[in-house]
Image 1 (spheres, rainbow, N blue to C red):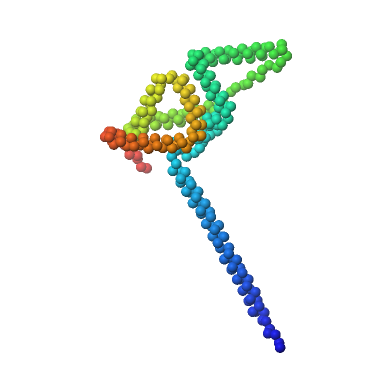
Image 2: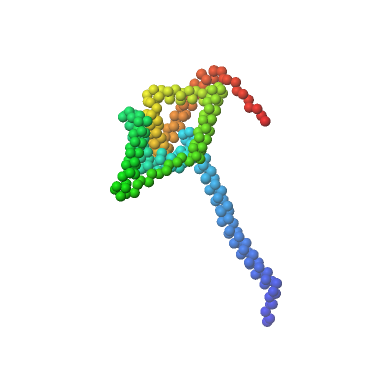
Length: 263
């Protein structure tokens, strides 16, 4: 009995049909993986945005958003203030303390100290230079100290800019446009005048120097506790200021506010 002949067209259709079904099943299996890969970055972005929003809602003193090191300007001065290198920071603080003891406790005068220091250095180098030939040693290499012109010009330019900003701020305060800022400046100046009665300028400068070397490093270490306490104090201050504003400040007539000219 003869076997039925298989046609080539039907055989090829079966092969290609099996291939299409297998490829479609594999593509269906790949869909959940692709969907997971597409959804995963979105979930991570949402987590990052949520973390950023929570972080931005945390109260920071003076609205600080950068690390303390960046707030202080970064670089070596910030490293010294934050005690990154304890030897350098301790040396700077000890040097300032020695100078304060000389001028304040021992009642040494600045001109006297500078003159005595110069006499000492000049005498030592003069004797060393002239006596080096008798003791068979090389004379001292005295450095040639020069102040760069660019450094002086940059310092003068920066000082000029800051002074102009200060004068502009004083002019705005005196114009009577912002009563809140005016009262704040008056309060700060009055506190400084009271402190000035207790200490002279040198002691006040030394105390400020010590505070700059202690307060930032303490705040960097305990910033969470300090910010929480500052937030409570700020909320209480705003409550008291709102009462004071309603009873006193709102009844004080304000100065005329000039409208800015539009181009």
